[in-house]
Image 1 (tube, protein in one colour):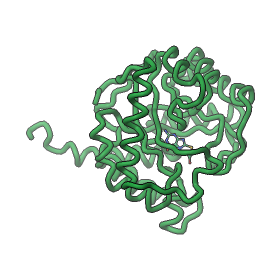
Image 2 (cartoon, rainbow, N blue to C red; image 1 turned 135 degrees about the vertical axis):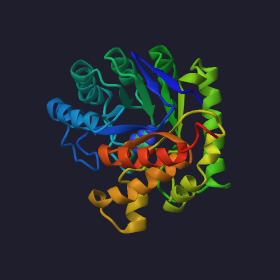
Image 3 (cartoon, protein in one colour; image 1 turned 90 degrees about the vertical axis):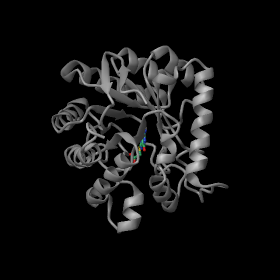
Length: 283
Ligand SMILES: Nc1nc2[nH]c(SCC(=O)O)nc2c(=O)[nH]1
């Protein structure tokens, strides 16, 4: 997999695991309930995450938690574009935009965003061409259905890791056929999207299977229900569980970890990496 990923004006060093800090600018984002809906609040939160070591700030204007209300294109633009502009202007930050909407991909790449993070893996009409035109790297994430129905008894005829690997292989081929260069792609198993808790746990256990696809892996498990259901913890008490998952994800090949609590995950990931890299200069 590439060690340096061109991200607009930035080159992201992926020779070691990096942290992506979540900046929700949606009123119904489940974990921080829209506290960051206005740019100045979002700016302070982003500044804090950058100070704690986030390499990327992920800005999302449409909550994709199960059962979320869809938002209009204009609503999404109004929420996201001002925040991207402010993050680029104030911090020259590497900003990824969590969107499936072509118009938002276009407007935010023009506003200086450095990565597209599409949980619908460019399947919406016009999304693939918007991504190609943007010239930005794109994270392709596994998700079946839509947030409204994706958790209704998700089922796979094969192992979940094989199903995810096959799906992402197909999406890579389709996006490549549509003009997206392979070296602009990142892959994500989509923890919590169309998956039961058992699916999520097995997917992490066997995530090295996705490493065989030869593209950088991005994972997002922070504060998710897979932690809540195993530990019986509410969303604001899932950090410890999330740190364990980040360490395991790095061991299994993840290079970008999408998290809410940046500082603690930076330490957990750097600790894990130190062990994995021990002696590698002499191996
Ligand atoms: N790439 C990527 N983007 C995401 N956006 C969300 S929103 C739901 C939440 O944070 O609980 N999850 C993910 C994820 O897992 N991967």
